Image (tube, rainbow, N blue to C red; front, side, top):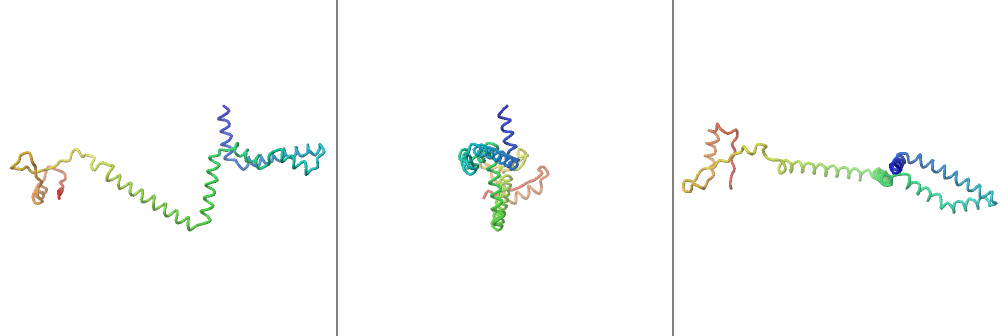
Length: 174
C-alpha cells in the first residue's frame, strides 16, 4: 500500500510542482531560521550562526534538488523540461521552425502516399474474386499438350462475340 501511495504523491507533485516547491521553500526557510535562532541563543553572532547552519544542512540548493528528485516523477519532469526548451528554441528561430515543419509535412505526406501505393499494388489482392478468373488459350494442333496464345484479331473476335464472360482482357507476351 505504501508504493501506490508514494507514486500517487509523486504524480500529484508533477502536476503541482510550483506550489509544492514554494511550500517546501517556506518550510526549509522556517527550519533554517529556527536553527539560526538556536545557534544565536547558544552565544554565536547572527552571521556565524547562519554560516554554521547552512554548512550543517549541506546547502539550500542541495536540499531543493533532493526534494525535487523525491517529490516528482523524474522521467516526466525531464520530458516537460525538454519540451519547454524545444518550444523556446523554435520561437527564437521562426525561419528554422517553418522549414522544419515544412520538411516534416512533406516527409510524412510522401511516406503516406508511398504506403498507399504499396498497399494498393502489393499488399491487397488485385481482385477479391480472383478464383473466378479464367485464362483462355488456343490449342496447338501439332502438339495436343501445348497451348498457344490468341492473336489480337482473334481476341477482338472473341471479345465482340462474348456473351458468357463479364469482362475480357488481353495480355501481350512480348
